[in-house]
Image: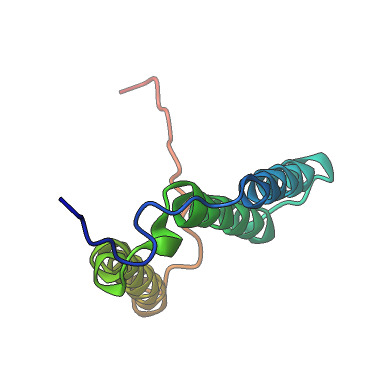
Length: 122
């Protein structure tokens, strides 16, 4: 009995491609560790670490989990929900900053410092 195969079904991908991606993952990991080594601080540190992390995860999913060779419908079904969640997280972050800044402005709070006074006579 003959079995009709579509393009990409039972095809082998060259090992050299996987070795290149593996090497690229090592380079991205080295960049990620170098952020700590050269002591980058603040928001830039976390931005760089998250960018390198997302790139590594993307390459792993795209090549090692064979997402590159899947149909567009499956790619959309798998990749769209996390992207929508990232948009919602970004919107919540912007709203949180807006709310915090308005509270600081309208309640006339200069600093958010809690001062504790200990009075032993009470």
